[in-house]
Structures are given as structure tokens and as C-alpha cells.
Length: 117
Image (cartoon, rainbow, N blue to C red):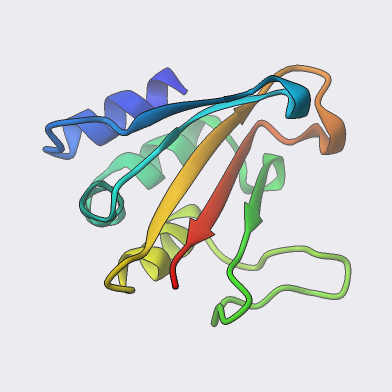
């Protein structure tokens, strides 16, 4: 998550989100505002994160009206940037990035949750 927070800060965002801790789910993360989400989508953060965390170790919880393809097994067929950018394209869209603690279900390292109305 230090990579994600550092990359967000490097994208020119003054505040790097609101910390979120979900011990019962084995996750710690950061909730980004709409402005922070847009800055992250336009900056180097998604590429930098993807250098350290392969797509096969990332998960995404997509909004019901997403345009991103999700297969029958729940596999999301999009890059980290595409998931973040889709949220940023909505006026009230934002993302929450979660680092999954070792031993968390699914074997994922990073989860991205989209939110918009």
C-alpha cells in the first residue's frame, strides 16, 4: 500500500485518501475522493503498482452498471488503470484500494472497489 499511497502523492494529489481498515476481511486500504481517483487514473500510479503486483494477483469489485467485461467465473478483464478510470469518469465516482493481508481468501494482494451512484 505504500507503493499506492506514494504513487498517488506523486500524481500531484494533496491528500492521499482516507485510511480504511477491515480486520475481519484481512484488508487495509485507502478510500480516494473523486478528485484523487481522477488524479490516480491520469497519473503513473496504476502502471507503477502493476509493476509490483501482477494482474493475476489483483481483484476488482465493479459497480453493477460497469462497462468492464467480467467473465462467468468473476474474472475482470481490464487493467488497474481501466478500473480506476471508469470510476473517475463518473461525476461522483471514486475507488477504494485494499491491500490484502497474507493468508487472505483468494490469494489476491490488491483489491480495487468502484463506487458511484
